Image 1 (spheres, helix red, strand yellow):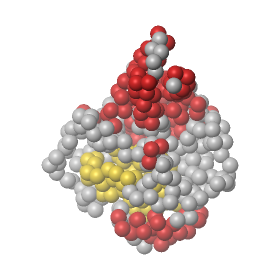
Image 2: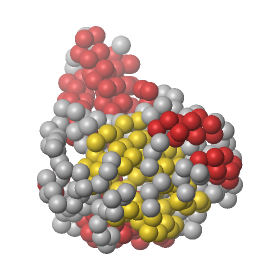
Image 3: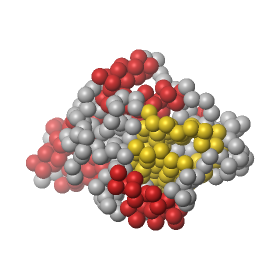
Image 4: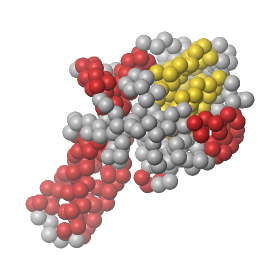
Amino acid sequence: MLLAYYILSAVFITVSLLPFIPHQHWMFRVWEFGRIQVMFLQLITLALGLLFVDDKSLLFWGTVLVHAGLIINNIIILIPYTIVYKHNTTPNIPKHSETISIISVNVYQFNEGYEKLIKLVREVKPDILLTMESNQAWEDALTEIEGDYPNFKKVALENTYGIHFYTKLPTNSIKTNYFIADDLPSIEASLVSENGISFTFFGVHPPPPSPTEEDNSKERDGELLSLGKKILETKGPVIVVGDFNNVAWAKSSILFRNTAKLIDPRIGRGFIATYHAKYRLLRFPIDLFFHSPAIFVEDFKTLPPIGSDHLPLFCTFFINQKEDTQEEKVETLEEGDEEEVEEMIEDGMEEEGNRPEVAKS
């Protein structure tokens, strides 16, 4: 038992310490995703050690202290994204717009269960649909919904970064942005509610740092922070949604949120994890959503699976441009952060991605 305790301790302490290293290689960044799981594994390891290890030497108590310190650190990082965190609700806020609904989903390019998504869309009837990893086959299948969604933007790619946007709402404009690379599209749509309130929708899907995709997070971080600066220049209410390939508590996600001066609706609501759809215990919240203070979120949850490795993310909200009750939820960049943001954007633009034109399953 003693040997097993030390081996497990070495593994879980190591993967808990790696995110502290400010390097963008996937080896350091990927462990930010699994903070929830690693924290519980550390708690189990610590409990087993205290209960079953007889030789409680100085080394043993040293590992106990390290475990305890890292568990406390993870609790501090994660607790804002739980329902126990103090969350200022905003009841009885007058609605200046109707309730607007969004489905955002990474469909998984090689998923051929097109009808599952089409059925879900017809049941839920969202005002806005954003799909990611949607290639030409997905685009062809989704022509079935175009009668209900007359305004759209289609970017069919075979590199797992295709993106499609559909809406019932009136539009002023819909365009595609390429902030970091010419094979990483994002959506920018100027929309109008039924009663005439304009707002801007951004849909984004940057690449993840992982051993099977990008070696580091430079493109992802550069894409998100470039978008953050773009949002800061955008007038009126703003919604940002997509597969960020990042967790909300990661440093680059927080830098994005603070750069754009947006609010994360997960704070005080729960993790609302979306990936991996098939493995509940290994699920992370990487499909993110942010909004400006004039946006009031009513419902925020995942929807039933559609055969993808991501669960669809669903949100309903309304707009009130006069209430300032959410302004206190907005955080801004700290001293020195602006310089770091500019460096990360520059690094992202200089990075050469490793994406084939046609991805293989």
